[in-house]
Length: 474
Ligand SMILES: Cc1cc2nc3c(=O)[nH]c(=O)nc-3n(C[C@H](O)[C@H](O)[C@H](O)COP(=O)(O)OP(=O)(O)OC[C@H]3O[C@@H](n4cnc5c(N)ncnc54)[C@H](O)[C@@H]3O)c2cc1C
Image (tube, rainbow, N blue to C red; front, side, top):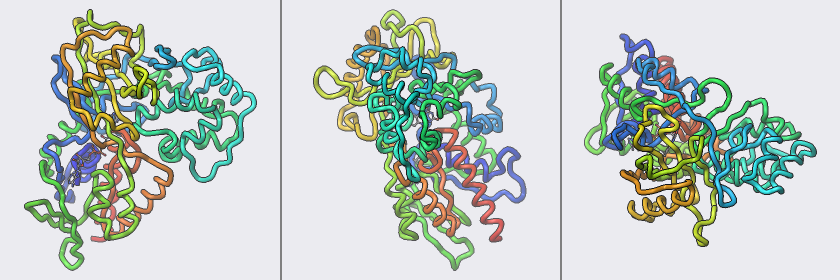
């Protein structure tokens, strides 16, 4: 249930994974509520290119996407991130991000002492962490904000760490669980010495709007047809394997039928399908709503909230725009003041054609601006025209020069970015344990990490779980 990348990856694994189907392969059906498979992954034609509307790249350090791409025979479509570095809008100007950041947390004192994007107080806080680190008494978990604020002070936390982590999770560091989102930070804080020194062995990870690693080897990949071409190819090959793919139909109820020959019945508006096992790869609150009556632990999945975002993509003639000399984009800290009233809405700018060679053209430039966070949904109340107009006004300030766009495209993602708050891991473990008793597996980015690699891994693990459960009960 759910035809985003995690549901499709689950179907791939159920239908034989790398080896393909055999005599023992079960009949698999994927039911997707929307007209399109792929969930948060989608591509469209734009300015003579194919561009992504959602995720535009994925971490190379995790193997899940690359393995799947290889299994689908698409390795020749892989493309690596070509540019490095990013800029921070701070104190009314653009500053090149210092080296040695691990998800925004400084690990190189010299770099931070030379960084003019923060005040001398913030630089002093970094110096103090290196020489006289503050102690922090930690229980089982803490928010990312609590750790970095205590160790490095508020300014570095909200002006460096939050824009980076917020850029990936669309959430606030004071709400996100370190254990679930950034476990290495919790481990480093537990050492109770300098946070910067403890994180340094992780290497220099200097994320732009979507994180890129400055150490050797590619850190980020995309696909030449866009990340959205991955679910399209997967859906095509699943059909060839005999998997039934149904789109435009939501699952409306799941019924246990322990007395029947199949333990489950899956309802859509017009159909009822018997099933041995069910993988739920939808947003967590949908699972809570459908199955919450089975167990309070499953019902609690309704508590996992998701942040939304809007992405506005622009194409401009090259002579209409002046960009920073290098780098893949800009990060804008939350609560950056705007025109003397309120705050900027843009949280990040991604220079798409600097990141991905296949999008680069001589005559024009494509970039996108990200809007919205867990506590900033102003864009939801505004018309498309109003959001686009406001984003253009902000880009005029943020970029060295931003002229008249030739094409614009606004994409709204009303949810899609689950927020891993304190207690997330326990909530998920308990819901999983409760679901497993009923031959139900949970998959998707609400559980095992936000991002394409984590979602694929989650789907494939859920599939292996039900294969094991159904074969041991057969
Ligand atoms: C704007 C944005 C930018 C992102 N950028 C990146 C990035 O650059 N790199 C990266 O790695 N990750 C990125 N991500 C995260 C990544 O895209 C997601 O983590 C991943 O795609 C989630 O996949 P999923 O299958 O778990 O969930 P989803 O894609 O949300 O899929 C869930 C599916 O369930 C369906 N569904 C819901 N209810 C029902 C029902 N009752 N019956 C049937 N179907 C139902 C939905 O229609 C949907 O298709 C981004 C996400 C967003 C929103």
